[in-house]
Amino acid sequence: MKILSTGRPSSSAGANTGCDAAEGLWVTERRSSERYGLRLAISFRRAGRVRERDEVLFGETDNISTGGMYFRTAHSLVVNELIDFSLAFPELDQGGDVRVSGQARVLRVHEKSETASEAAGVAVVNEEYHIHGPQAAA
Image: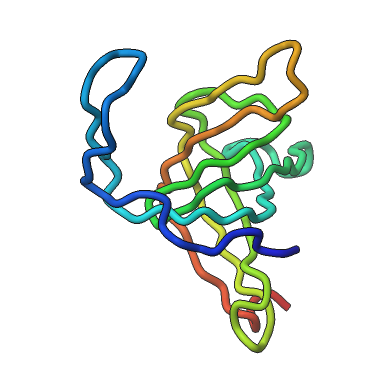
């Protein structure tokens, strides 16, 4: 797995981002933490399901922050659904991958069109997360 981004923030928290052309309104950035344009594999499960029957689903992040993330997936999710997620930052530490796991709530789903082959976009807010160093990932 490779990080396909420079890791630079993609917007500033609290900054005016300009005029929304569709609405003609000024839009203010409401996020309280910096977003980073990182493309990482994400695996997730629908929270609260019986583990034996629950399948692991996959996607790829577009951006992440301590407050949440936006990712693309071929799987359908609904607003307010809870997911348990896991993602890895490859070789962030000399000892190996650093893994982040936690639970997030779906805020928005940008469904793919019926004619498009692209995955749906999902915005989530982190309810909780844990950082696991290389020793815990082994």
